[in-house]
Amino acid sequence: MTFKASMEALTKDAKRWDDTAAMLQRARADCADMTLRAQDFSFMGGDVHKQYEEVRSFMEDYLRDGERETSGAADALRKVHNTYQGSDEAAIQRLKSSWEWH
Image (tube, rainbow, N blue to C red):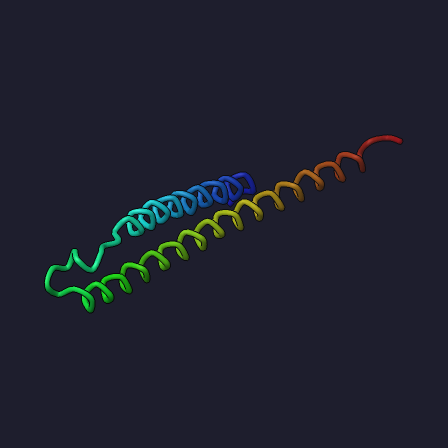
């Protein structure tokens, strides 16, 4: 794989992780909106409501963690991209200066 192709792959992969983080963010927001009151469970009431809320809260936290981790993966890929890009540009300048007459 060429350097250019590798750099494009890093950018493309970072976008995929960003898209995944955005999807998880929307899912988390939807999950947060799914709160119910104990009365919404009719005669089953408190115990069922408590179990429902535990599962809903767990899923909201799980989606938040997923969003944070996938966003972090995208940031890490961009950091690698920027590091390599900076290294490549520095190498070009070093080679260019070695061929210039002083």
